[in-house]
Image (cartoon, rainbow, N blue to C red; front, side, top):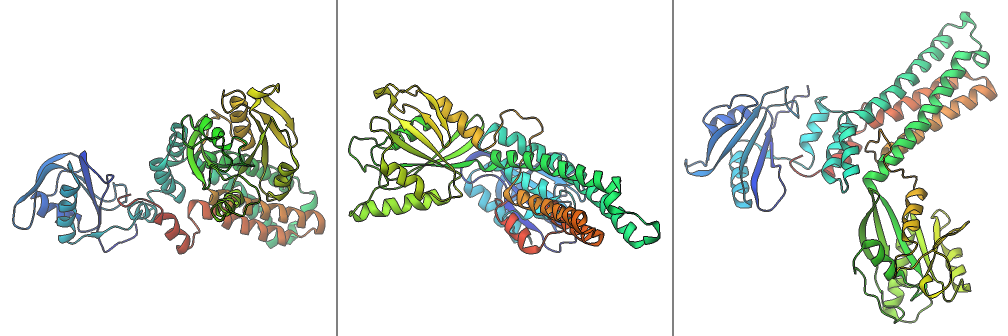
Length: 449
């Protein structure tokens, strides 16, 4: 247990009016605060009706108090929850009274941070708390729950155990050379490296799926003016989000819309038409369009199928960033004879009508497939980009050690690479994490959590 000398408090329910609001308090002064505010420390884990009073014994509110003694609480410390009527004034008065009795206002995520520091949760589970609160689809919420229950942590620890066992074997062989273990012909080392490589691949694939469920993908709709970009945004969103006219250049700024495709969150951005322009406002819109394209996961380049693929469209393809994949969308096929659906694979090309909806199902399926999303995959869990980055670094370390062994017979370098891989994996669960990273992670939580 990490001994915190201060006691923290915050409103744990969202801002605004509601039937019930909760003030949460955690730390060593909780019993004293409970005695003053509730006349006595409530019986542990039992809702107790209390009259909450201010310094002058005037009633602030009447509600329920819940007391969780350490270490049997979310944070591992004494916790007091005050359940009152959910008006903002009532919550502010109740929180002010708790602060007056010796608590301080909690930082964002500080309750979860204390749970992590007191070994009630590992870092993956602590992050899953925030992911569950912020989930925008039912699948994302289910994935966050699985992470909170330790599914991701178990997978990571299983990989870590295999890595540690292999490292111990290699280092033991180095420490006792009289055993004369030939690493190059030792089947145990070869099998261990092969199994670990497969575990990395499986875990990375699952983590990417979990990251998609959490963050979604960013899709930018681009192309020349009047190709039907705004119509496509409206069709995907299922409502009139963007103004659509026959006048080229109607869209001058980026328009953002959140949609869900088969449970995967997607951020769709409509942009100004890409063309040379002397108009100051239009040029700024085009600049913002290119800025959005730079950060996209995929770009949909919309082409007016009545005009066909023009030289200006091909110029847009050439100007796209090399690291951003794109899909060609032939729109307005209700005015041509083209069949809806997939047209070509390289580059991916899909024929649609944003007006009638023809081909939109093929487009949705393509977007899900392009990002590696598989609906209904069992064993999903919530993951973040930092987890994927750490797994990639650890995997690269193991592969580097394997190459050193195979090409140079360097068992010492293999052992060092395995050690570095272990440190990278430990960053995921928080067993080896610098304070700056912890501060960045928990700062993204809401206050009261």
